[in-house]
Image 1: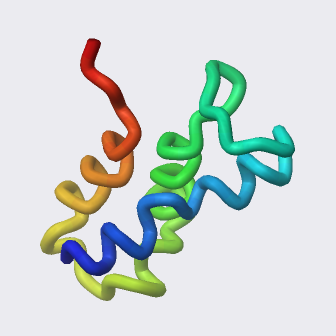
Image 2: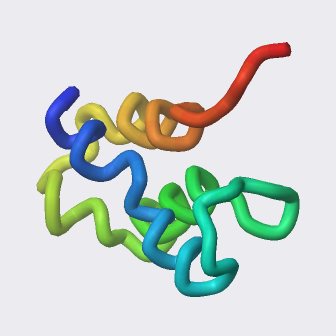
Length: 70
């Protein structure tokens, strides 16, 4: 599970760079949110993980990987 999270956590960066030409997360583009959308709403996760046993953990880890507590 950790390997899958490590490999997929920045999948949203590709679209971020395409749209914004940089790696800065802001209110216009948040790469973790986009990564969750691509993986779970568009069901791309099934190419990497066949069942949903740990789906919620993977989803939360990817969604929260760049969140900062202030």
